[in-house]
Image 1 (cartoon, chains in turn green, purple):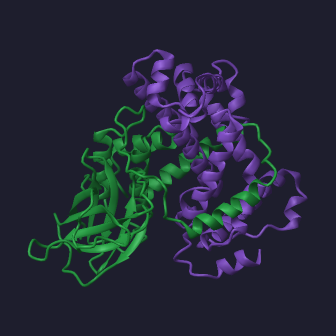
Image 2 (cartoon, rainbow over the protein chains, first blue to last red; image 1 turned 30 degrees about the horizontal axis):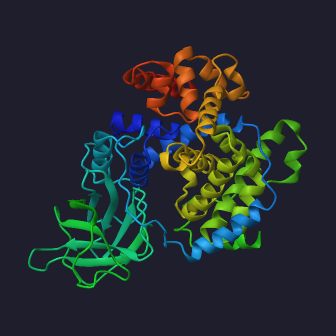
Length: 239
Length: 223
């Protein structure tokens, strides 16, 4: 049995209705991926509200829609992570659905298991990470979540819409210790969920720094982060 | 179909939604009219599970199967929210790209494939509506038309057409009219808290608590 906080449940209802900002929604999806009971609640409410969607009058697909989509899938697959935007737009604060700090904070805390009654330990479908870090931008808005498994593999998933210019890459870093300095965990061509495998590093620990930076194509030329920071955060220990 | 069956035999770890196995529908069941509706629903559910398994395995037949079964309804939902054929088609296209990419993450133990697919489509529609840059390319009068048409999707009277004959209709009927109207404005027309507050001239905090209370009562009734 789990003891979800009422607030998370209320947020998950609002998620089903479509009332969360994209960042809040992405964070809630991260919580759901770690909490099967929350995922059940969302799926159940979603299915019960589905008749509302089915009441819309159907509209015939235009001729050739399926074929065009098929072409797009093939092209996008090849270019899956090359994006064309030229800048990294911050999430505007005046959007009518801009992420609210307390909401993103609560969801981020749920992901790292810091909220009482939430966290890992039941029906965990994946191997359990040793540490989890939620990476925030300069405004405190979550951008990515890193799960480090302590066996020189980690996953990074993005919870904000990050555009990567065609001549740039994203690079994930950690700082195992001040002596060792920053170590690269991997280079990504776009902000897609990625499994990272890297050099032998000491076991990750609580409060270890993780960050994602924007670097020249192929990764930082110096072996240390040089570009603007997309997000950074400290690890929370899971086991 | 051959491909999807091959998928079923594939690594189950990666496709948790197949762990329960796919029930087999027989022709005999369909002879009983009382069972036809259930059997149709089961057949659709099986079809969509197979289609998502295909997508997860990188087989585009999955996308084609989803569009063949649900495409018209999905586009209908997008058109109802976005009120423009070009935006609705863009939303459906984007949504199908996401379905294709996220199919591996779908877990059938948490809900139906159909609900999952429609949720992705709705989210995509909402992102288009809330992307100021995206909508700023529209002429101002068209933008006004779009906003007004969203408001008129959800009439205060005669809201029942939005729910069809279903449990959700009975339960929505049991809510006070203000909560019901606000919940429908959010779910059916895609309005945010702030938009509903402005349009209904009710403080934001009141809107939030009306939605929370309404949803709570709705879930109690639906359970």
